[in-house]
Image 1: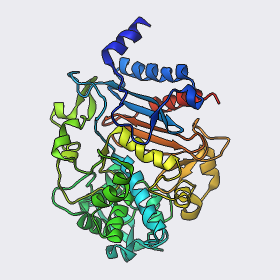
Image 2 (image 1 turned 90 degrees about the vertical axis):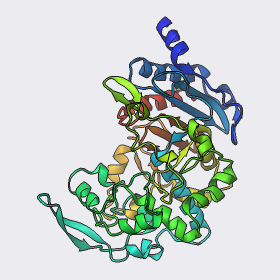
Image 3 (image 1 turned 45 degrees about the vertical axis):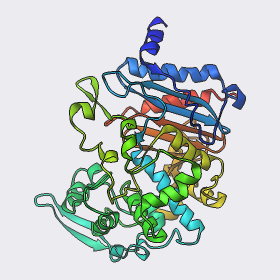
Image 4 (image 1 turned 180 degrees about the vertical axis):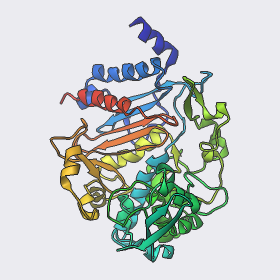
Length: 428
């Protein structure tokens, strides 16, 4: 216990975040039927990982029934330990951007501007007459293709069943093909526009026939371009006008304004057993993008940065029925199992066995006796490359946001054990 207290004194910074609380009010765990004592074990869980040198720290928020019942930050913004994590920190969301893009698409769907089963080429003509990778010669990276059997649709993009993948996540033939087309863009690009990027992507052979299977990749970035075409404005402006401003999200951007540069936290990596930021190591090529604007590429799948409270404000709107950004019908469609509608050879037993499937932009937990998570059936969630997490539990009216900034964090047990503690705290 003495060791744990000492660690707390050295490494724990608890932010009450009183100045900006978005749509929330402060509350105790008991006020929403949860145990404060059990939630305190979340502190111990995080601190143990830090003590064991498995985690440099982070920021974590739990809200239930519109009340923030847990909001704490642990650790420091760099290895020199001069500045603690706390209120106002801006974190790279990476793939948690996808949830924002999905909501924007559903807004346009609600307005009748697009249909979920529209072909992508209706909005982006470059996607006409696509082809699928057939044979590949590893000796010289030459390949052959076959025509698509059906067009990629918006629903295929939302469910990652389009055949558009991340080349950098698929070593071998797919990576080689994507490199041939210069498609490992990621978060930003120095000279391209979103239009140029996505038109180039349309020429890359699909990894498989549309609807053949789930293949995680650049589908959401294509959706970002569709939003631009359908709305007539750049993606950053669309998000600002139709999501961020209505919700009061003041600190969420593709490219940060200069007066907020100092609020962007560093990305840690474990170098030789010691946590160092990419800035400290002089390795910022893949992490400096939020400070490199203004640029004209907006990565709808990965490009946003935000604060813990801003992102919590966004997902609170979803857990409470869409708030003032999305209707109940569209939200219900987003959060249901979409796989039977998009997978050609859908096998329900496989999804029931894992207890989860995929909606429109999110993992969705099924009402299955084999569900491996304590989260309620109907909970939907996603994560980000730099080790950020969120979930939305409509049944419990509960949300969670976890922000860390780590390149190469593979310890999913950290999050799963935290979720168990959160759900164990629910008393009634």
